[in-house]
Length: 438
Ligand code: MN
Image (cartoon, rainbow, N blue to C red; front, side, top):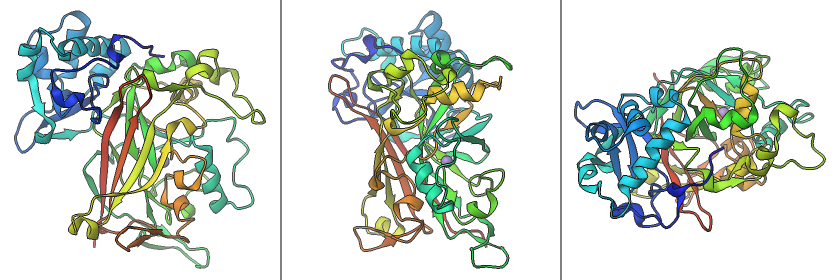
C-alpha cells in the first residue's frame, strides 16, 4: 500500500498556475497518466501527465533530458502510444517518475524552463484508451447494489448466500471498451417480457448506466502464483471512472445460468486519466465488516488491510438529455455516492482473482461493479433509482427518465477531498446513447 511522501504535501504549488486554484482535479499532488495527442492532427499518440489545465507530454519530457535513472526509464515507457510497458514496470517505476515530475513542476523549480515547452493545453487534446486492455473482469462489490438488484430479479432471495464470502465477478469483453466521449448505438437483443410466450429481437428499451471504478493492473503475476492481499496494490497501476452501460431488458432473459453477456458487452466507457494508487494514499479508510456478517477468509484479510484497505472517493453521475443540450442547460446530477461503501476492496479483487493461480497482465481492467451506497439516493444505476422503471426521475426541465433515451449523455465524476490533503479528481467519463441501427 502506498504511503505518504513529499509528493502529497498539501502546501506544494506548481508554476503551472491553473494547478493551484483548489478546484482543479489535477493539482501537483495528483499527476495522473493518460494517452493523448493534439486534436485534429496526425501526431502520434503518447503518454501524458495532467497538471492543472495542461498535459506534460512524456515523449517531449523524455527527450528533454530532465530525468535520470528509473524516472527516465519510466518517462521513456510512458512516451509510447500505450501505457502497457510503463504499467508492466511496476508501481516503483511510476512512483519514481511521479517524484521527478513533482520536483520539476513545483513553484520555483530550476527545471521550469526546460519543462515548459513540453506542455500541451488539455483544451487542445484528444484522448485514446490508456492502454491495450487485454482482459476485463467485472466484479459486484456493492452489497447495496447486489441487494437492490436481487430484490428485482429474485424478490424471495435477493442476496445469494455466496455474496458475503466471495468477491463475485464475471469475465467481460474488452473490445467494446471506449474512452470518454464515446457514443454508441443502442443495442438490439433478445427480449422476453414475463407475460410474453416467446422472446423477440428488438432495440433495448431499458438502457441503463452503472457507475463504477475501473482498476488497471500494472505489474503482472506469473501463472500459478497467487498475489497475497498485502501485495495486491503493488499490482495495481491506478483507477479510472467506468460506466458499464447495461441493457436491463436483455439481461434478465440471458443471464441464467452463466451471467451477463450481450446485455453488457456492446459498450463500456472509461475516463482517460488513470489516477495512481500513490496519488490516492491520503484518502485511505479502514476496511470494516458489520459484526454479524462473516469476516473474510484469511486470504482476503490482513491487519494492514483492516486499518486502511478502503478508499474515500466521492462519485457522481449526471445526465444531459438532447433537449437540455439544445437549450444550453448543463448536465444535472442523478446520484452521488462514495467508494468507501464497497463490500470488497480493489486489493481483495486482485487477491481473489489470482488465488487460483490466474495470471493478471499489465493493462487488464477490473471493474468494481455498480458502487451504490446504502440509501436510495446513492444508487448508481437507473434500475435502482427508478425501482425498475416504476418511479421515473424528474429532471429540472420537466422531462422524466425511467431509462436512457436516444441522445442522452451521461457524465461521471470522481474526486477525493479531506482536511489536510489537496483535493484531487478523476476528470470526466462522458458517453452518449445513439439510436439503434436501422
Ligand atoms: Mn457492471
